[in-house]
Amino acid sequence: MKLLILSCLLAGCLAQEPRPCSSPPLLTGALAMSTQKESLWVNGKYLYDAMGQRIRLMELGTYENKTFSYDVLLLYREATMYEIHRHNRTCNKMPLKGDFQPMGIPKDASLLGQVVLGSSSGPGEGLLVNTWTGDLPEKAGKFMSTVTEFGCIPVSTLFHTDRFGWMVFSYFDNVIGILDPQDLNPPPYCQHAEMKAGDKEPVDFFSLFNNKH
Ligand SMILES: *[C@@H]1O[C@H](CO)[C@@H](O)[C@H](O)[C@H]1NC(C)=O
Ligand SMILES: *[C@@H]1O[C@H](CO)[C@@H](O)[C@H](O)[C@H]1NC(C)=O
Image (cartoon, rainbow, N blue to C red):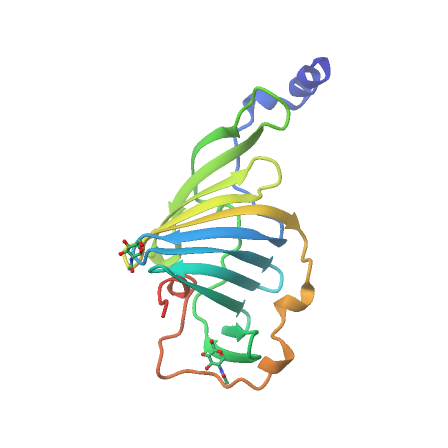
């Protein structure tokens, strides 16, 4: 206790305001997602590489009472998305639009508050988090994001767009780093996939979760 008080005095911890922050550039973890308009529920695994601007999502979901699996690789540098069908080793390749959005809190976000999730009564019972709101790029809508005070690890993000209503992402079991680097490259059987364009609009991150079958 003495040590804590001393370090607070030295570092001025009482006066410290939460600040916008960048999440670690490499993350692997799990996520749960649901959407308002499409009654879609998804659980899955994600890999996130901010340096290479690559995201992989491997999901199991329920849409109108039917379960499905969905596996996508988003390569923002190449403006390309792969839908990967592991069971029959085929791929769809599609144009991806929109800029890569790094995880974390953009500098122009507004702080809603700092809270403890769980309890602050005992060690290990609680998690100190900051919640922020702000506008999505290109006035597409609004977001509300919660990240840990220490490490800027994503906890949850709510997006609201007129097109899609609310979309809620919760992140858990996050690990810093990429556990399976090969999962961020198209599998060998995707190399010859042809770009599917023309029949479809280029997909963006949000429409990914809103065009289910
Ligand atoms: C989903 O299942 C519930 C309960 O079985 C049923 O009431 C509902 O109508 C179903 N919804 C759809 C879209 O099939
Ligand atoms: C592979 O599976 C996907 C998804 O189930 C399906 O759309 C596609 O037609 C299949 N491809 C072949 C060649 O069977």
